[in-house]
Length: 254
Ligand SMILES: Nc1ncnc2c1ncn2[C@@H]1O[C@H](COP(=O)(O)OP(=O)(O)O)[C@@H](O)[C@H]1O
Ligand SMILES: [Mg+2]
Image (cartoon, rainbow, N blue to C red; front, top):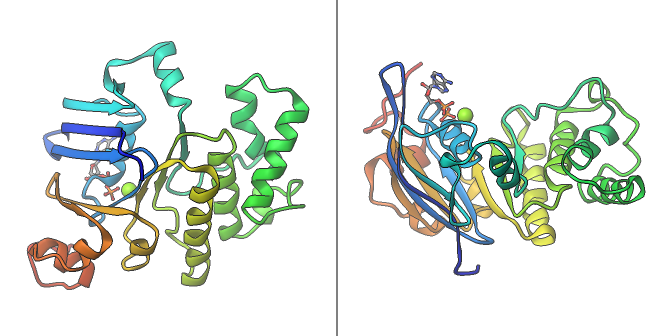
């Protein structure tokens, strides 16, 4: 892990229709680090992630990406900073009318001026990396849920972004496929060397993937530390979350 700060969130507040979702989130993520943000469903994890790429604007606070406040940027400048990012959104969101190949090629065609041969090489390399060599002609409807996630991951990585955001990359997958996606994220990080932010509620599996883990609760990061520090936390809300117990400071709504 390098020492340079890649992402710095300072006092981030966001409310919707009187609902305080983020109440002063502070978090620093180093270049090359993989940070996982955990927290119960509805705690604001996706809202947090959307601020990192400027899809949502803070009510107050700052979101610094490589030293630049993304909340203050718009137009071309925002587009330029967004080019640093690869994003794997919750649900994967492939284009159903495009083939696997076309889906992965899409960000290269949209965001770069690479020639067709270079694009082809990059797409083939990304597809091979995610274990989908030879699947380029398939359509999303013809492949399994786990394979769709692999395509979405290839698409997120193909531009060789310096930051990759993952919003619950394994939700809806069975445990074996989920594990294979986690392995693939680890391998991808080794190959592409990005700064990663992974939203997850896969406990304990995410502890094998992340360098550090931050828990979002009641609109703030209540603890951030190594997986070991989180596993041994004395914070009651962290303990309750990682043990999955119904009793504790986290209300269980069902
Ligand atoms: N665009 C929006 N407009 C209004 N409310 C929103 C919006 N996005 C998220 N919320 C609300 O913010 C809260 C946190 O949502 P979210 O970040 O999606 O939670 P999660 O931790 O499950 O990802 C929820 O109560 C959700 O309904
Ligand atoms: Mg979410």
